[in-house]
Image (cartoon, rainbow, N blue to C red; front, side, top):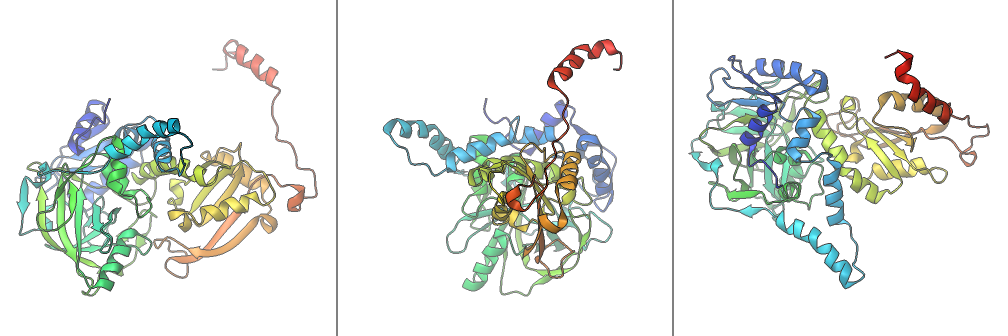
Length: 485
């Protein structure tokens, strides 16, 4: 069976059939009220339901929130039982193995065919261009103001499409955009992101940088915009790998960029690097704190295109847990095989949502030699966006790093702070407010593994308490008779 959803609206209908979506008919304001309802639902056990606000006050376009805000909905969007399946698929395609024989070459062909079948496909027309507004007014869209001290209304789930001004390689990133007026947006291109790199190249070349802000499309698309892919990997190719069919793209009306034909809304425009930076913020961020006002580029909007009956997709960030908990979980699971490819000793890793994904990385390893924990931590801190991690804690292989109780038990019992803690310096997420400088500060590596004599431990490491297996088996068999429940 192929990928089942052509667009966001088909996905919403499927969620409704499974009773995973709630329709909100009460007119609610796009300023704060939709956020308050969504925030309460996100914090329900299991993430609550997806929400469709049918009548946002003053607008005819419905607003969808919390669409990806549960494990079940995230798996439905990716069409998998376990997101790790996608990671292994990507691993099989990317691993640099040289076939040793003609038979090995033939075995490789199915994976190469999947890659070929996933290449984005240009089509002549798409539903997203049913309506074309060449005199755009961003204020006609139900863009949310999420928190009381936000600097304005923000697009929070836009796939921001740019191309490298030199190579033409596409990047699709998930960057917030603040509405500055009818045809102006501030673009939050953080210094560690590929969109910022494209902006700097355009500035060097004295070129304007064309931008498309995409709302909706096939359900994997908003997720892949958030995925920490290498710069040379096209996000829409990655989405094609997930769906095992190509993402259909159309040419922009006023810009020389392609974007998904099945999207709901696309904002076309350009950034002129010669223009001065503008104030962006404050913004209530996924850390649970307001990010203060900082200077970022502004985008001139040239056109807005949309379906005749679009749905506006938004996400709310704030004190965890929020919808991004499940997007982060998908990333963690999908990229585990690639982490294992580089570090075969890794058993599992976890980036807890409560740590805002960059504050903590818990990793379990098959320890083979003294200092192995520090080797793994050093490698992780040099790997893509994991390089922004603030605390890396390394455990033995039997520790379930996704169980916070087990993590704290092993951490507390196995660590001598004087011996097992390493303080470093390095790049930090720019949203981290604890560091003295933006984007640069301290890191902590903690070795929470059992210590070996070669690592300086001179005592006898104690044995973990375990019940006799035969006794456990007997009690299992008797359990119902005991009447305990």
